[in-house]
Image 1 (cartoon, one colour):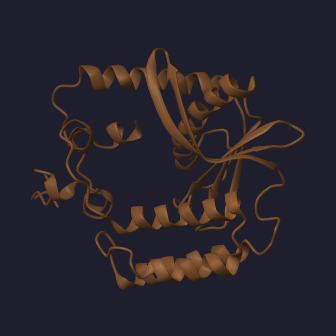
Image 2: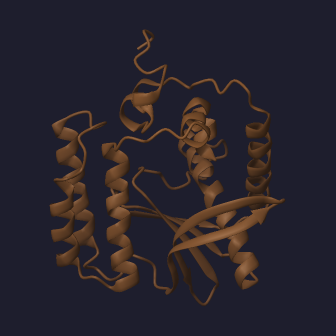
Length: 245
């Protein structure tokens, strides 16, 4: 859903026109780390094995979208550093693991919703939803006036709040905590569940569905870095490489 707001034309190409997406470095890197984390959390795969797999598969990641060899080397270093940090058994908060890469299917106001929850945990306090992120999100500043980083955090929390409604439907209670594992920074961000923000996320989802239904133009959002390095549809995009760059 967020992709529609990021670039309506990309959403059109991907979901309505059905273009074949090209592999990009950053997305492929994130997918690789998600697979390794799934093996660690779901199957207990040890760190040396994960590190060896990471090194082997990293060399096979596409170069498309990677700005420079320096960036590629940096992501290699950060990936190894994170995996080694898992040797400390206290990297993740203590919890009973309920689900890993849990596929969920339910409806919100009659609209179908499908997603994958990276980690569902449970403590004495209640349920936890944790999402792995390659993006370097920052913990909430708690300033009187929210910072840009706070606003960005709230955007990403929408997805977890939508997941929270499935947890409520399935287990009879909302989660107590929402978390992000920003693995490049080796940082766990923890947010207390807020029912009002959950309702706002649901309203945002419903409004977004109606916006998609009523959209007719699907205008692009042209941003140099996103278009050049992040968009998997740029090879089919009529606006790629426009003169405004």
